[in-house]
Length: 309
Image 1 (cartoon, rainbow, N blue to C red):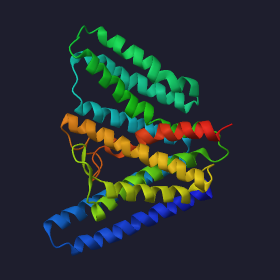
Image 2: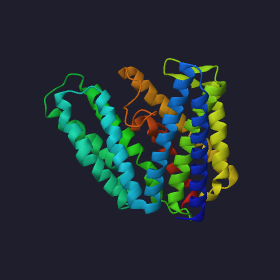
Image 3: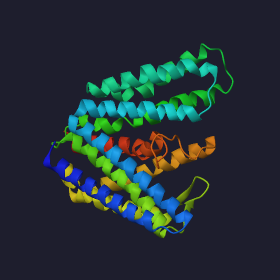
Image 4: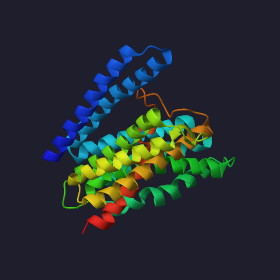
Protein backbone atom coordinates (compact mmCIF):
# COMPACT_ATOMS: atom_id res chain seq x y z
CA UNK A 1 0.00 0.00 0.00
CA UNK A 2 1.12 3.55 -0.75
CA UNK A 3 1.89 6.31 1.73
CA UNK A 4 -1.38 7.94 0.67
CA UNK A 5 -3.28 4.90 1.94
CA UNK A 6 -1.54 5.28 5.29
CA UNK A 7 -2.52 8.94 5.58
CA UNK A 8 -6.14 8.19 4.72
CA UNK A 9 -6.12 5.40 7.31
CA UNK A 10 -4.75 7.79 9.94
CA UNK A 11 -7.45 10.32 9.03
CA UNK A 12 -10.24 7.74 9.33
CA UNK A 13 -8.92 6.55 12.70
CA UNK A 14 -8.72 10.15 13.93
CA UNK A 15 -12.32 10.85 12.87
CA UNK A 16 -13.63 7.67 14.49
CA UNK A 17 -11.64 8.30 17.68
CA UNK A 18 -13.03 11.84 17.90
CA UNK A 19 -16.56 10.57 17.27
CA UNK A 20 -16.15 7.93 19.98
CA UNK A 21 -14.90 10.48 22.55
CA UNK A 22 -17.56 13.08 21.71
CA UNK A 23 -20.31 10.46 21.63
CA UNK A 24 -19.32 9.13 25.07
CA UNK A 25 -19.32 12.63 26.53
CA UNK A 26 -22.70 13.49 25.00
CA UNK A 27 -24.27 10.27 26.25
CA UNK A 28 -23.17 11.03 29.81
CA UNK A 29 -24.63 14.53 29.58
CA UNK A 30 -27.94 13.59 27.95
CA UNK A 31 -30.82 14.58 30.20
CA UNK A 32 -33.90 13.34 28.32
CA UNK A 33 -34.83 9.84 27.16
CA UNK A 34 -35.18 11.08 23.57
CA UNK A 35 -31.79 12.76 23.61
CA UNK A 36 -30.14 9.74 25.20
CA UNK A 37 -31.70 7.42 22.58
CA UNK A 38 -30.40 9.60 19.74
CA UNK A 39 -26.87 9.67 21.16
CA UNK A 40 -26.92 5.92 21.81
CA UNK A 41 -27.89 5.36 18.18
CA UNK A 42 -25.02 7.58 17.04
CA UNK A 43 -22.60 5.69 19.29
CA UNK A 44 -23.84 2.35 17.95
CA UNK A 45 -23.22 3.65 14.43
CA UNK A 46 -19.70 4.72 15.42
CA UNK A 47 -18.86 1.31 16.89
CA UNK A 48 -20.08 -0.32 13.70
CA UNK A 49 -17.95 2.08 11.66
CA UNK A 50 -14.87 0.93 13.58
CA UNK A 51 -15.56 -2.68 12.57
CA UNK A 52 -16.37 -1.80 8.96
CA UNK A 53 -13.25 0.38 8.62
CA UNK A 54 -11.01 -2.38 10.00
CA UNK A 55 -12.52 -5.05 7.73
CA UNK A 56 -12.46 -2.91 4.59
CA UNK A 57 -9.01 -1.45 5.29
CA UNK A 58 -7.62 -4.90 6.02
CA UNK A 59 -9.02 -6.36 2.80
CA UNK A 60 -7.67 -3.46 0.75
CA UNK A 61 -4.24 -3.80 2.36
CA UNK A 62 -4.17 -7.55 1.60
CA UNK A 63 -4.69 -6.90 -2.10
CA UNK A 64 -7.13 -7.46 -4.98
CA UNK A 65 -8.01 -11.06 -4.11
CA UNK A 66 -9.06 -10.19 -0.54
CA UNK A 67 -10.98 -7.11 -1.70
CA UNK A 68 -12.82 -9.11 -4.35
CA UNK A 69 -13.70 -11.81 -1.81
CA UNK A 70 -14.97 -9.15 0.61
CA UNK A 71 -17.30 -7.67 -1.99
CA UNK A 72 -18.43 -11.13 -3.07
CA UNK A 73 -19.44 -11.77 0.54
CA UNK A 74 -21.22 -8.40 0.70
CA UNK A 75 -23.08 -9.23 -2.51
CA UNK A 76 -24.18 -12.59 -1.11
CA UNK A 77 -25.44 -10.99 2.12
CA UNK A 78 -27.15 -8.13 0.28
CA UNK A 79 -28.87 -10.53 -2.13
CA UNK A 80 -30.00 -12.61 0.83
CA UNK A 81 -31.46 -9.50 2.51
CA UNK A 82 -33.22 -8.53 -0.72
CA UNK A 83 -34.91 -11.91 -0.95
CA UNK A 84 -35.67 -12.02 2.76
CA UNK A 85 -38.06 -9.11 2.17
CA UNK A 86 -39.16 -9.63 -1.43
CA UNK A 87 -41.95 -12.24 -1.67
CA UNK A 88 -41.25 -15.29 -3.83
CA UNK A 89 -43.03 -18.45 -4.94
CA UNK A 90 -41.94 -22.04 -5.32
CA UNK A 91 -41.54 -21.44 -9.04
CA UNK A 92 -38.75 -18.93 -8.29
CA UNK A 93 -36.59 -21.27 -6.23
CA UNK A 94 -34.52 -22.68 -9.09
CA UNK A 95 -33.71 -19.18 -10.34
CA UNK A 96 -32.85 -18.04 -6.83
CA UNK A 97 -30.56 -21.01 -6.26
CA UNK A 98 -28.76 -20.27 -9.53
CA UNK A 99 -28.49 -16.58 -8.60
CA UNK A 100 -26.82 -17.31 -5.26
CA UNK A 101 -24.65 -20.32 -6.07
CA UNK A 102 -23.90 -20.07 -9.79
CA UNK A 103 -24.31 -16.54 -11.18
CA UNK A 104 -22.75 -14.74 -8.19
CA UNK A 105 -19.57 -16.87 -7.92
CA UNK A 106 -19.04 -16.98 -11.70
CA UNK A 107 -19.41 -13.21 -11.93
CA UNK A 108 -16.83 -12.59 -9.19
CA UNK A 109 -14.53 -15.23 -10.68
CA UNK A 110 -14.59 -13.30 -13.95
CA UNK A 111 -13.79 -10.14 -12.00
CA UNK A 112 -10.97 -11.83 -10.09
CA UNK A 113 -9.36 -13.10 -13.30
CA UNK A 114 -9.66 -9.69 -14.97
CA UNK A 115 -11.83 -10.92 -17.85
CA UNK A 116 -13.57 -7.58 -18.37
CA UNK A 117 -15.43 -8.44 -21.58
CA UNK A 118 -17.30 -11.42 -20.09
CA UNK A 119 -17.63 -9.71 -16.69
CA UNK A 120 -19.48 -6.83 -18.37
CA UNK A 121 -22.08 -9.02 -20.11
CA UNK A 122 -22.40 -12.21 -18.08
CA UNK A 123 -25.27 -11.07 -15.82
CA UNK A 124 -27.12 -8.51 -18.00
CA UNK A 125 -27.09 -10.83 -21.04
CA UNK A 126 -26.58 -14.50 -20.18
CA UNK A 127 -28.05 -14.63 -16.66
CA UNK A 128 -30.97 -12.46 -17.71
CA UNK A 129 -31.81 -14.93 -20.48
CA UNK A 130 -31.14 -18.16 -18.61
CA UNK A 131 -32.87 -17.41 -15.27
CA UNK A 132 -36.39 -16.75 -16.64
CA UNK A 133 -35.98 -19.70 -19.00
CA UNK A 134 -35.25 -21.96 -16.01
CA UNK A 135 -38.22 -20.48 -14.12
CA UNK A 136 -40.64 -21.43 -16.89
CA UNK A 137 -39.86 -25.09 -16.25
CA UNK A 138 -41.81 -24.84 -12.97
CA UNK A 139 -44.97 -24.09 -14.95
CA UNK A 140 -46.03 -21.29 -12.57
CA UNK A 141 -47.23 -18.29 -14.60
CA UNK A 142 -48.85 -16.34 -11.74
CA UNK A 143 -47.27 -12.84 -11.66
CA UNK A 144 -44.47 -14.28 -13.82
CA UNK A 145 -43.32 -10.94 -15.21
CA UNK A 146 -43.19 -9.24 -11.78
CA UNK A 147 -41.46 -12.24 -10.21
CA UNK A 148 -38.77 -12.42 -12.89
CA UNK A 149 -38.23 -8.66 -12.69
CA UNK A 150 -37.44 -9.11 -8.98
CA UNK A 151 -35.07 -12.01 -9.70
CA UNK A 152 -33.21 -10.01 -12.31
CA UNK A 153 -33.22 -6.67 -10.52
CA UNK A 154 -32.07 -8.20 -7.23
CA UNK A 155 -29.13 -9.82 -9.04
CA UNK A 156 -28.39 -6.63 -10.95
CA UNK A 157 -28.34 -4.42 -7.84
CA UNK A 158 -26.59 -6.57 -5.30
CA UNK A 159 -24.12 -8.41 -7.53
CA UNK A 160 -23.54 -6.72 -10.88
CA UNK A 161 -23.66 -3.07 -9.83
CA UNK A 162 -21.95 -3.53 -6.46
CA UNK A 163 -19.12 -5.52 -8.06
CA UNK A 164 -18.04 -2.43 -10.01
CA UNK A 165 -16.35 -1.19 -6.82
CA UNK A 166 -13.67 -3.94 -6.73
CA UNK A 167 -13.68 -3.91 -10.56
CA UNK A 168 -11.89 -0.56 -10.31
CA UNK A 169 -8.76 -2.61 -9.58
CA UNK A 170 -8.83 -3.82 -13.21
CA UNK A 171 -8.23 -0.30 -14.51
CA UNK A 172 -4.81 0.91 -15.58
CA UNK A 173 -4.86 4.63 -14.80
CA UNK A 174 -1.20 5.03 -13.90
CA UNK A 175 -2.02 5.13 -10.18
CA UNK A 176 -2.56 2.44 -7.56
CA UNK A 177 -5.97 0.97 -8.58
CA UNK A 178 -6.76 0.03 -4.99
CA UNK A 179 -6.79 3.74 -4.21
CA UNK A 180 -9.70 4.19 -6.62
CA UNK A 181 -11.71 1.71 -4.53
CA UNK A 182 -10.71 3.57 -1.37
CA UNK A 183 -11.64 6.90 -2.96
CA UNK A 184 -15.09 5.66 -4.02
CA UNK A 185 -15.91 4.14 -0.63
CA UNK A 186 -14.62 7.11 1.40
CA UNK A 187 -16.52 9.68 -0.66
CA UNK A 188 -19.79 7.74 -0.71
CA UNK A 189 -19.75 6.80 2.96
CA UNK A 190 -18.67 10.24 4.20
CA UNK A 191 -21.41 11.75 2.06
CA UNK A 192 -23.95 9.47 3.79
CA UNK A 193 -22.57 10.36 7.22
CA UNK A 194 -22.46 14.09 6.48
CA UNK A 195 -26.03 14.03 5.14
CA UNK A 196 -27.14 12.36 8.37
CA UNK A 197 -25.25 14.84 10.58
CA UNK A 198 -26.37 17.95 8.70
CA UNK A 199 -29.92 16.62 8.60
CA UNK A 200 -29.94 16.17 12.38
CA UNK A 201 -28.30 19.55 13.03
CA UNK A 202 -29.99 21.94 10.59
CA UNK A 203 -32.46 19.84 8.61
CA UNK A 204 -35.86 21.50 8.29
CA UNK A 205 -37.19 20.88 4.78
CA UNK A 206 -38.20 17.30 4.09
CA UNK A 207 -37.02 16.15 0.68
CA UNK A 208 -39.59 13.39 0.12
CA UNK A 209 -41.35 12.19 3.28
CA UNK A 210 -43.15 9.34 1.51
CA UNK A 211 -39.89 7.77 0.33
CA UNK A 212 -37.38 8.69 3.05
CA UNK A 213 -38.82 10.64 6.00
CA UNK A 214 -35.40 11.44 7.50
CA UNK A 215 -33.84 13.06 4.41
CA UNK A 216 -33.85 16.86 4.29
CA UNK A 217 -32.79 19.35 1.65
CA UNK A 218 -30.34 20.94 4.09
CA UNK A 219 -28.85 17.55 4.93
CA UNK A 220 -28.39 16.70 1.26
CA UNK A 221 -26.72 19.99 0.35
CA UNK A 222 -24.47 19.94 3.41
CA UNK A 223 -23.54 16.29 2.88
CA UNK A 224 -22.85 16.71 -0.81
CA UNK A 225 -20.71 19.81 -0.31
CA UNK A 226 -18.69 18.12 2.43
CA UNK A 227 -18.12 14.98 0.36
CA UNK A 228 -17.07 16.95 -2.73
CA UNK A 229 -14.55 18.92 -0.66
CA UNK A 230 -13.18 15.66 0.74
CA UNK A 231 -13.02 14.22 -2.77
CA UNK A 232 -10.99 17.21 -3.94
CA UNK A 233 -8.68 16.89 -0.92
CA UNK A 234 -8.09 13.22 -1.78
CA UNK A 235 -7.42 13.77 -5.48
CA UNK A 236 -3.82 12.63 -4.91
CA UNK A 237 -5.11 9.06 -4.60
CA UNK A 238 -6.41 9.24 -8.16
CA UNK A 239 -5.40 10.27 -11.68
CA UNK A 240 -7.74 13.28 -11.39
CA UNK A 241 -6.82 16.94 -11.14
CA UNK A 242 -8.54 18.87 -8.31
CA UNK A 243 -11.20 20.15 -10.73
CA UNK A 244 -11.74 16.66 -12.17
CA UNK A 245 -11.94 15.25 -8.64
CA UNK A 246 -14.68 17.76 -7.84
CA UNK A 247 -16.67 16.61 -10.86
CA UNK A 248 -16.16 12.92 -10.14
CA UNK A 249 -17.03 13.40 -6.47
CA UNK A 250 -20.23 15.19 -7.43
CA UNK A 251 -21.19 12.28 -9.70
CA UNK A 252 -20.45 9.85 -6.86
CA UNK A 253 -22.51 11.66 -4.22
CA UNK A 254 -25.51 12.32 -6.48
CA UNK A 255 -25.54 8.73 -7.75
CA UNK A 256 -25.03 7.50 -4.18
CA UNK A 257 -27.95 9.56 -2.95
CA UNK A 258 -30.26 8.05 -5.54
CA UNK A 259 -29.00 4.58 -4.64
CA UNK A 260 -30.21 5.08 -1.09
CA UNK A 261 -33.34 6.88 -2.27
CA UNK A 262 -34.42 4.20 -4.75
CA UNK A 263 -33.81 1.38 -2.29
CA UNK A 264 -35.74 3.33 0.37
CA UNK A 265 -38.68 3.40 -2.06
CA UNK A 266 -38.35 -0.37 -2.48
CA UNK A 267 -38.30 -0.86 1.30
CA UNK A 268 -41.41 1.29 1.71
CA UNK A 269 -43.14 -0.76 -0.98
CA UNK A 270 -42.23 -3.94 0.92
CA UNK A 271 -43.32 -2.45 4.27
CA UNK A 272 -39.89 -2.48 5.91
CA UNK A 273 -37.75 0.15 7.62
CA UNK A 274 -34.40 -1.61 7.17
CA UNK A 275 -33.14 -4.40 4.95
CA UNK A 276 -31.74 -6.26 7.95
CA UNK A 277 -30.20 -5.98 11.41
CA UNK A 278 -26.68 -7.32 10.98
CA UNK A 279 -24.98 -3.91 11.47
CA UNK A 280 -25.85 -2.17 14.76
CA UNK A 281 -27.22 1.33 14.15
CA UNK A 282 -27.20 0.90 10.37
CA UNK A 283 -29.62 -1.92 9.60
CA UNK A 284 -28.53 -4.48 7.05
CA UNK A 285 -25.65 -4.77 4.60
CA UNK A 286 -27.89 -3.48 1.83
CA UNK A 287 -28.69 -0.40 3.92
CA UNK A 288 -24.95 0.34 4.09
CA UNK A 289 -23.97 -0.35 0.47
CA UNK A 290 -27.01 1.13 -1.28
CA UNK A 291 -25.11 4.31 -2.19
CA UNK A 292 -22.16 2.32 -3.56
CA UNK A 293 -24.53 0.22 -5.68
CA UNK A 294 -25.49 3.26 -7.78
CA UNK A 295 -22.21 5.17 -7.53
CA UNK A 296 -19.77 2.35 -8.37
CA UNK A 297 -20.84 1.70 -12.00
CA UNK A 298 -20.95 5.44 -12.76
CA UNK A 299 -17.51 6.02 -11.27
CA UNK A 300 -16.05 2.90 -12.91
CA UNK A 301 -17.18 3.71 -16.44
CA UNK A 302 -16.34 7.40 -16.29
CA UNK A 303 -12.85 6.54 -15.02
CA UNK A 304 -12.40 3.77 -17.59
CA UNK A 305 -13.50 6.02 -20.47
CA UNK A 306 -11.60 9.17 -19.58
CA UNK A 307 -8.54 8.02 -17.60
CA UNK A 308 -7.34 4.72 -19.09
CA UNK A 309 -5.32 4.27 -22.32
